[in-house]
Each structure stands twice: as structure tokens, then as C-alpha cells.
Image 1 (cartoon, each protein chain N blue to C red):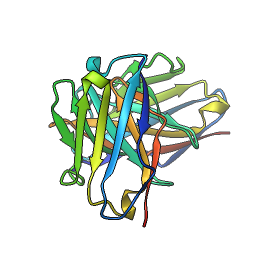
Image 2 (cartoon, each protein chain N blue to C red):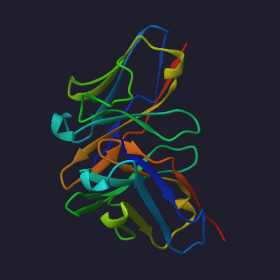
Image 3 (cartoon, rainbow over the protein chains, first blue to last red):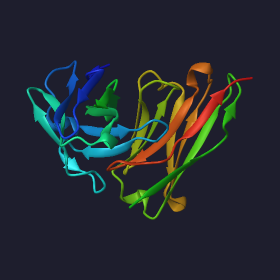
Length: 110
Length: 113
């Protein structure tokens, strides 16, 4: 089964920009992987920020954007806010309808 | 927008069967391209369990495929998860989700005698 990799932890200053990535052990991530990005705060359910690589969900702040970058999927946060401190997960779709989650990135805003 | 709510027993005995239902409100699951189940063991990351497509096609995590069944009842706007032969390793918060990214609040299921 494919392995999806994310940075275990990242830090960003308030107002700063950070990019989280999501890679696949099978090769380059493409639009065909329909990448999703989720935010999860402690004690809460995940919340979808981005679906289908770059479509922002209706409730996701405009400072979050999704893209493909250097063979990986990327989530860029521009203008970080204290409330953005959370765990972020990506998931990729593979042939046969199977889904694999990354291990998550713990984002600290300080 | 679709709102999802999981329901089912919070405690299951080892070797027993875990059964959860996800009920959609303020929207119809019939219009979702897929409905899925995801779980999260305490203190760990998210794990995809499986999904059912709008056409009724199912796909499952290879590590669980021998024990899991996902089904849908469109008349009730619900979809369900059944996981057999559970062990303590199946203790987790179970979430239901539907395209394009709606989530339930989660249901903690503990496997213990």
C-alpha cells in the first residue's frame, strides 16, 4: 500500500507564510490524486479546508490555498493567525478508489 | 450544506461486532459522490476505513477489508459501518464523511470486556 508523507511539525510566525507538503511513495502527486487537506484542532473533528487539490471549502479562510508543487501536493498558509495552530492532514486517492492519509503535520504559530 | 451525525454503541466486547450509522441532515447523501468512514485511535492520526460511491461501489482499506462492510440506505439518508472480530486495537473515534468534505462530530468506540 502507498505511503503518504507529511512534515511531522512546522512552525510559523504570526502573519507569516508556511507551506505544508504531501508526498506519495508511488511517485509524483498529480491532480488525479484529488488531494484533500484537513485541519484538526485538539478535541475536535477534522475540518476540510481543500478538496480536489485546490478547491477551497466554503468555510475555509482565504489565507489557505492548495496546489501541486515539485511533485507533491501543497497547502500554503499566507498570513498565519494564532487560531491556525492545529494538526493538518492530507489524503490522496489511488486507483481502485482507495484512500491513504498522511501522518499529519503539527503546525505551531509562534 | 450537509450535516452528518454518527450513532451507535460506545462500548463493544472483544471479538464482537462494531456497528455505526451516519445520518445526514440539511442535505442528501444521494448527491454525494462518496460517503466514507475514517477512524482515529487515541493520540494518533487519521486512518481511512473505506467508502461507498454514489453508484454503490465499495472500496476498503486493505488492512481491514476482511472485517469491514459499508452500506447505504438512501431512503433514510444514512450509511453504515460494520466491523467484525474487533480487538482493543479498534478502539478509536470513528468519523463519517461525505464528498466534498463534510464530517460528523465523531463517535468514540471502546473495545473492552
